[in-house]
Amino acid sequence: MTLRITFPKADTTPKGHIVVTVFEGDTLSTAAKKIDKALDGLVASAMKKDKSFKGKLGQVLTLYAPEKSKIDRVTILGLGKTDDFDSLKAEEAGGKLFAAIGKAGSKDIMLVTEKSKALKNELAAAHLANGFSLRAYNFDRYKSKKDSKDDAPKLAALKVLSSHPANSKAAFDALDSVTSGTFWARDLVNTAPNDLYPDSYAKQIRDELKPLDVSVEILDEKKLEKMGAGAILAVGKGSERQPRMVIMRWNGAGKKKGAKTIGLVGKGVTFDTGGISLKPGAGMDEMKMDMGGSAAVVGTVKALAKSNAKVNVVAIIGLAENMPSSNAYRPGDIVTSLSGKTIEVLNTDAEGRLVLADCLTHIQSKYKPDIIIDLATLTGAMMVALAHEYCGTFVNNDELWKQLEKSSAGTGEKLWRMPLDDVWKKEMESTVADVQNLAKSGRWGGACTAAGFLEHFIEDGVEWAHMDIAGTAWRKSDKPTVPKFGTGFGVRVLHDWITQNYQ
Ligand code: BES
Ligand code: MN
Ligand code: ZN
Image (tube, rainbow, N blue to C red):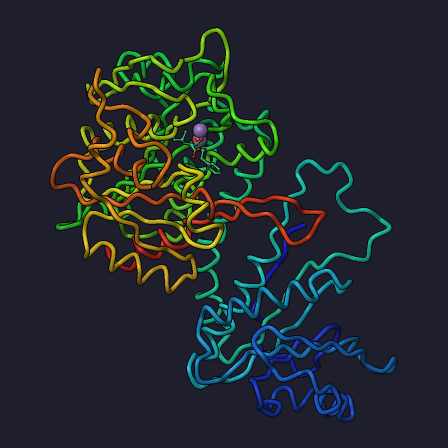
């Protein structure tokens, strides 16, 4: 069931499940006082009696109203310290609100917002709602029983009262475009790999993005062969389901003078068994998320199109399934990439870099973007270093890093700068071919040497960032019933970076 979020005009007769907000150490706002009065002081007295409730960010306290009242329940939501309340904190509070009451059985909830010093109320309302919505994401495609009759009624609507409903709605709609991209990226990562494979994935992208005026071109294995994209083809050789390259163009800035072309590239390995260099069995199911980089890229393109961003973006993702078979590529193979550079394959599990190499070459030679960012679940080493928390980001330009750092702080998608170094580029030179896909010195600094490999496919003078999202693309949930799930990481930070700097 989808959640409907609206911003109605201030309702004088609150009813149902009401949420009021309070800053740490503060008393109730004027709006909340009205509700308190209607309940003969129940809210204020609960706050006084519950000594553990301090109004800390995301803290909640829920009370039941007397039977005769039109109000069923009141939830008090803490917003933390009023001085440093900002849009990110509002989203965090909104998320925690959903976690606390989203499944408590109320069909609709009315959130009454209040004035704050640091953030305009109309914006706070939009961000609270967006945080709530992001947390309400649910993936039940494979559950045969969706709305079980035994369960309590499901939440269908959130009404948010703000000082300026029209402005709140406009702000929310803009955020919601980005959320729709994030949700799509999550869905793609969560889809089982028997359903999501190169051809089905490519078609889904076409069906989803074409109606949004994004041009979508799909290159199948025959076209890839004709072009000479030997690296991505090698990775996909072992699978019945042959590789695809998908090229998306969003021309929101049109022919505007000075408009830059942003290039995005994503790794879309729809399942990574490791190939002949087979991975161990335990936890291998997690490798369905090995297309997380491509999901972030297509999610960003959707977000840009839905928010009608006045920017020009070309995005290329490489889709392949890495399987062992009698037809699979092997350790020892030497393949010729689209760039003409030969690659000695030393481990078929280091496949992502091969897929990216051909995508990076194609985007540079055909579209000549001013800046390129690639995203990939590239190395286990990245996860060892930064876990699920930070995305290691390798950038060859300080100005670009500054922009990314700012967007990271603004969206809460955490980036951490990692080093590029010629030492690592050298590590990837082969004795028999131009490059090899494993570092000479072995596993140390695996995320850095992988970036060093990619750097061999970046032309001189091109501004470039590589984001290794191996850890951030997915998480294990703290709830045992939801073991693993896609986060949609990358959509928010990329959308912010593109619209803040190139619009
Ligand atoms: N898809 C994996 C990286 C990965 C591992 C992502 C764990 C998320 C969680 C990638 O294709 C891979 O297998 N990389 C190897 C590279 C090695 C063979 C140089 C790795 O990290 O072990
Ligand atoms: Mn691999
Ligand atoms: Zn992989």
